[in-house]
Image 1 (cartoon, rainbow, N blue to C red):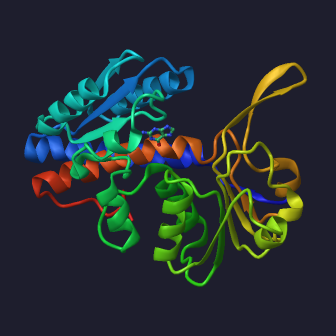
Image 2: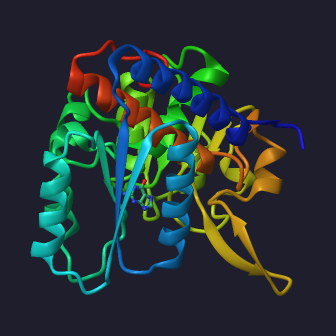
Length: 296
Ligand code: GUN
């Protein structure tokens, strides 16, 4: 392997340490404890793991953690009532509704019920619009983590060609907006893009967020490019379940200049950025100075 490994686990630990310092200062100076509420509907096993990790890490940085676990057959009215109560609760500065929701619930309606100032996922339509027009917003956690890693590695991103493979509202679209905000020349590609390998080979920065195991192989990568792998796919290999990204790591790492592994790359950054967003939301809601090292 020739590429530099971008260690998201270590980077996320650094962000959490910074978050803990800010939480301590907010408590000491203003008598406030940032609070993050997580709402989980149903029993999806992957979501349960995420929510448990979020709860642990929230407590570790000194914040209050509130968990609302609701049965899979919860009605829309009952879920909206929980969100209304969290919106009105002054101890709650950030609200996250774990996705995906059960099929009978309308995710857009539920997300748009969250007070945009408490929308630490950055999924509310107001935050999407603010990000798209370059205004101060809550920024979705996974793309925020990717941008922090890219800035850390490259310094200035201006003028670089960035190709984002994937067009989801959670990763692909906000990632493209953030890279545009840092003056990259941005292409959004996806599973139906023609000549995808050729498009990807133009990238100085290649972000894979397409949700297909190991689809991006070494021949998609420009020599020396930075490859950010957002994928988390469970596959069976040699009779064992393994986690792999959207990038075929072994072949891509022979060509790339730098690459994130799976696991241990982008994944740990998501919760770290969620905690960072909760500090940002607490400061904005209370007119406190906003830490510049936790957001873009
Ligand atoms: N499910 C998978 N990733 C996420 C995320 O970043 N936020 C929420 N709310 N749900 C998710």
